Amino acid sequence: MRKFSVNTDKKKTSPTDEQIKRQKDFARLHHEYEKLTKRGKKPLYRDPKLFMLLFIIGLVLFLMFMES
Image 1 (cartoon, rainbow, N blue to C red):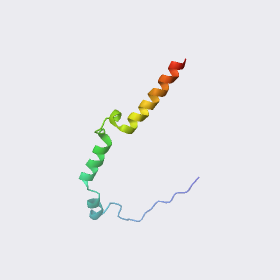
Image 2: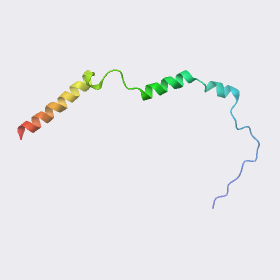
Image 3: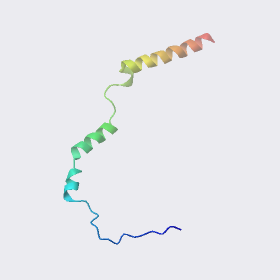
Image 4: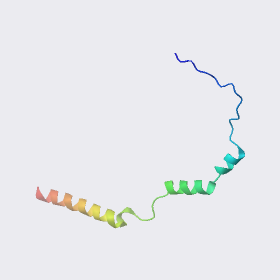
């Protein structure tokens, strides 16, 4: 079995006021939350690269089913 040692030093474990103020950027936090939860403004099918990819996949599937 392991032997654990307990820190009996009375060190200050709470953050300082300066550290707390540095982390209180609620505007940035809200912006990151909105970016994660909101959908993109442009629909996927209107993206030209994705549209070409979907068109090519559809064309390949169409040609595969027409051959049989």
